[in-house]
Amino acid sequence: MSKFTHLAFVCFLAFFSAAFAQEPTSGQTERASSSNQEKLSAQSDPPELEAYLKFRRWINAQPEGNTPRGEMLEAYRAHLADQGLTSTEIETELEALRRGGKRQEVELWNQVLTAEQPRFNTAPNSFLVRMTEGVEPGTALDVGMGQGRNAIFLAQEGWKVTGFDPAEEAVALAQELADKAGVEIATVIQGSEEFAWDADRWDLIVLSYVMVRPHIGQIKQALRSGGMVVLEAFHQDATQNQSIGRGVVYESNELLDLFSDFRIIQYEDTVATADFGRRETRVVRLCAMKP
Image (cartoon, rainbow, N blue to C red):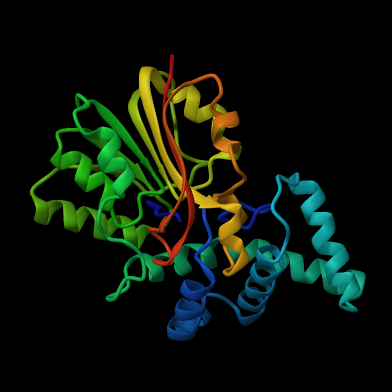
């Protein structure tokens, strides 16, 4: 996310935490897992790592939808029971997941977002660039800021930017890159659930491949009248040939419904090179203004 947080769940363990808005694509996950397994294992007990990876595989295979957390927890319990685990073993598995899952997710994104050879677009999101051209700078919030590609661009254009992300190594990199670029950005190491969105504070909120649905009310309240949201994510069709976290996947026109009370400035449903995964696929984009 710009997260590229993102990358929310979705990203995050949907019923234990919503720290991230997005899951890596399957290729990013495989690369992170293979090259950094020792680092992950060293930072958590093996049962926690195993429980985390097992849950991630399961949830990523679930159909798109906004399943309540309680129902999802019961669904995962049933899945574990189907695998032959006893009630005691299931509770042990879930407890290991609770202990280590959030930290594992943070570490995964630290690795993806600070890789020496990034597998995501490190330039500012092209739709954001287009939608802010000619707009008078004000206060901007970059949700799931990652290594700062969008925050730094906005700061260079004169915006007063704050970004947040739970991946602390990515946030540190964002500050380092901002210093090199000679711009100032404010950063917060938090996820969407912990961050203080406030009310009528922001002139622009950037939602680049981050989870929006659980925070739609906070996003709308946080914008000032006349403020804009700029959003890009995957269309449901993109999941046909790759594994993508459900939190950053939308049906046709779903974003129009989510922001039906806003003035729609631009909506796109198109085939383009996605910022994450870096392959040509179907994406959705929205720029909308709060009345």
